[in-house]
Length: 422
Ligand code: FEO
Image 1 (cartoon, helix red, strand yellow):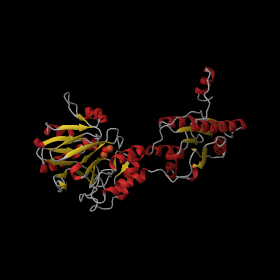
Image 2 (cartoon, protein in one colour):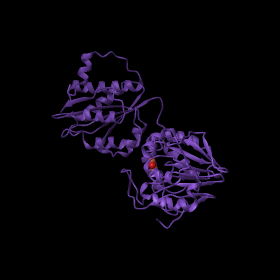
Image 3 (cartoon, rainbow, N blue to C red):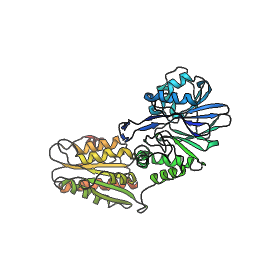
């Protein structure tokens, strides 16, 4: 174990987590330049002791050694699990074995994960929601339901008498520094923002809902599940989350935003993109923007896509595939919410022309709706094919504005639509 013992963060309340300075990658997708911490806390009240979250299984020994410095197992009455991901529940089965009298408190959505993690036939627990609380004598833990931050099960726990928010992944970051408190550790701001961008950003609406619960609290300290304990200016971290979750600059109202992205080897897919744009612009209430992916990286476009209502992607087919800049942009959309936006695809091809269907499939996989069949053109688009692109843009814009007329589709038309090379 590291030489660092349990750390008191308020009278009778201790950090008993674990340090993982050697970690360089978290959940495959996150870089961790100096590791991370798995924060667990022990709260002592006059009539009971609570443990809030545990640690990754590989670091259980550290956790138990620190916990034993501040509590006996037979004193533990309460185990709160703010989040069931294994980095916080790896030591749970062993903690339950050592503290069999302790009662578990979890959110309703956490039940399935808990049963998968602890395979006891007689597993008992208490489901809690916003407004519920548990008392430890002179200490009260209140529960705040904050789903999707960053799994559906997540909740925060508020220690009323000490003004401490045990926030789970919220306000956390992957930064390992045994000095623990935000006013004493190294500069971790990059990590705080990086963590938000990769973990919280896809759930922006849920972040805003959570902030509505957290904002009124007289916060003295935020104790997240990763990274520094936020003792200095804890409210500033709440404000920063509100800024990060805010929409981009206001650019007008009362329109739907359609972004048309394309990349083109010989100008053919570009002409199709321009026709899609022209068609969409015939519909009132739609603002259309055209972007050549050859000129831009993914990052600014991800910001725009997050705010957009509709997306159209144009790609040639090269070696049976859409081209890399299109896939790069599509793969970068995992960090934002795109579900229920409208999508479409088009492109020129030489031989086989798979790109359009592949893009459409990917859009559906990202949970976009693809209401209009894509357009393909062999090499140079004909006037008729350009008219088809124009119609694609027009119909997509109509779907965006809700001005598309209900249409009865005949079986023969349906069969034609389903044919991949029609
Ligand atoms: Fe730190 Fe979502 O687990």
